[in-house]
Each structure stands twice: as structure tokens, then as C-alpha cells.
Image 1 (spheres, one colour):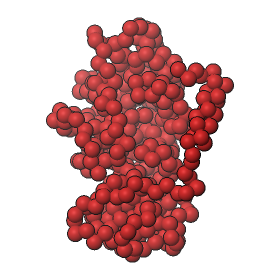
Image 2: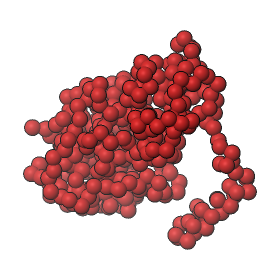
Image 3: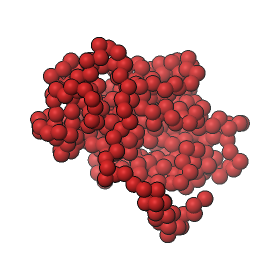
Image 4: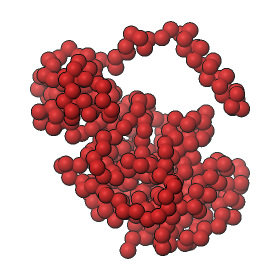
Amino acid sequence: MYQYGIVAIGYKNVKGIKRLLDALSKADYGHEKIKLIISVDKSDSDVTLNIAKEFQWDFGEKYVITFEERLGLRKHILHCGDYLDIYDLDALAVFEDDTMPSRLFFQFMKAASEKYMDNENIAGVSLYSHRMNYNTKERFIPMENGADNYFMQCAQSWGQVWFKKQWNEFRAWYKEQENLESSHLIPEHVTGWPETSWLKYHIKYCVVKNKYFVYPYLSYSTCFVDAGEHVKVQTDDFQVPISNMCVQSRNFHLIDFDEEALKYNVFFENQILYRYCNVNKDELLIDLYGDCVATDKRYVLTKRKMPYRIIGSWENKLVPHEMNLICDLHGNAIFLYDLENEGKIVRFPPKDVRADQKRSKMEAYFDILDHWMEMEEQGKSLE
């Protein structure tokens, strides 16, 4: 029988920690006893700490942790993962104070833990389901596979589950890292995150160790992106619908991690598309979002216009975009190129900007003014 825990992470976001704890108190835990750890980083105010101390937890033991000196976001989150060992837990659900879990999050957490706890290919479980490729700010819709989950080579920070063995392996790897250098294997958006980010290291770990997170189609958490360490102005860009209405227990259909499984990489690219290109999967780079900067692979599947030999082309009408290949919708929007590079690294030109998307500075200034006025109407100051 596995031992489950939850960590609620707080600092100065009083509204956020109240919202998070309230949502946790309303979740369905069945008959399980769950350890709740409220970890509050040191600040110049005791408001968050007092809220944590006064919060009533009816589903098991509660622990309130604080520190004599401020750890900072990165060090604090990493320390929270170590609660797996400190409190002898097998699986730990992790929520920062700008996230909110659904009532059903624990049901998915338990099912995924029982299915993948001992799988060496799995680095963790995401409770959040992306609707946007955060690297390119474009819509992301995972392809349906008839199950409740798929796999993605992206660690998560907006509601996630860590397993003890996998977390300790990551921590051992992390101790050897000095900094995160740019690499064509990791999106520039990720490597460009500030050094206060712990997540970019967990993402790099997944890439270099070829490990994946389990992702649900229905989201069991959402993110408010409250103003804080990394965000100066609150945004709703990463709000997603959460599975919250039904509180009855349900059975999940979770797929096996094998050659047939639906997998996305760190660039949000569907890794099974080699089947529809008639090329060796190890020789194909999938670049439908146009976010890759280089490759040593021979073939590239992309929407970019490139000066190489085209050996296949498809439309870009269906959603998600990989369905154009799966349905074999021929056209001139998605191209399969043969680079004939013999394993040498090829650098890509910048992502194309269509003529009708080019805008003058004046148009951009009007957009900024519109957004400013919108914020003022909502009672948000520019400051």
C-alpha cells in the first residue's frame, strides 16, 4: 500500500494559499489518509504562515514547515521534493500557491501512481493538461488515443506528482549540474528562463535521460499565474478547464509505456509521426511548431520553407496538425525534407513570418495601449 502526501507551497501570495488550501479541503480522497505538508518560505510577513497553522485538515496528519532564512523559489521547490524521504512517502502531489487542484486530482494521482510507480521511463505525473505550447504560444491539442493519458517529455510545475525513487534519481543528477547551457535539444524558451527556475533543470533531465511525464487529457489542476517571482502582471493565459464536477470514483484507462504509446517531446511534437513519413524514426526531426534551431538528423518534417529536397507534403487544415499526416491529406503546407547531411548538424533559418502577419510599430503601440486600458478597466495598475 502506497503512502501518499501533498505539499502546498507558500510565500507571500495570501490569496493564492487560501484558494489552494480551500480546494485541497474539498477534494475526494476516498478512504485514504493523506499527509499534508504546508511549506512556507521565510518572508517579512507571518500572514501566510498563520493561515497554514490555522488551516484544518481532516484527511490525515498536517505539518507546517518554515525556515529561518529565505530559500528562494528554486531551492524551496527542490527541498519540497525531499519531503518524500523526510516523511516516508511513495508519491507526493505538489502545488504552488498560484495553482488550484480539481476535486478529482487524487483519484488520477492514485491511479497513475499504481500504474507507473515502478516504471523506469517515467519521471513523474502531470495533473495539468496543456492547451498551449508555452514555447511558441500556439494552441496545443494532443491527439486522441482512446485512453485517459499520453506521455510528454516535459516536467510540470502547475500541479504534479513525484515518486520517491524517480525524484531521488533526479536529485542525484541535479547535484552535478552547474548551469543550463543552450542546446538544440531543448527549446530556447526553456533555457532562457531565469536562474530562479528549478523546472528547466527537471525538463533537461527528462530530455538527457529520455524520461517522460504522464499527462492526462482532462486537467486535474489549473494555473492562475499570479504575479510573483517570475511574473510581474497576472495573466489567465494558462487557465484550463478542470475535471471537477463529478466526485464519484471512476476507473481510468491508462496506457502502457511501449513502442506504440503516444509520446510528445519537449518541443510539444508528436513522436509517432515517423510511421506516416516512411522513414526511420531515429533519422526524423519533427518540427511542426517551427521551434527547433538545428538537427543532425537526415529528415525534417516542418511547415517552414527550406532549401532542401521535398519528399512528401501535406495540408495544414485538420486539428491537431498531425492529423493531416495521419489522414494523408496531401497539400503544400507541411513538408518532409531530405537534408542529405550525413549526420552533420544543420542550422535552421528563423521561423517564417507571413506577410500578412508583419505589423508596423504603430500597430504594436496601439495593441499595447489597448491592453493597458483593458487592465485599468479591470482595476489593475500598470505598476
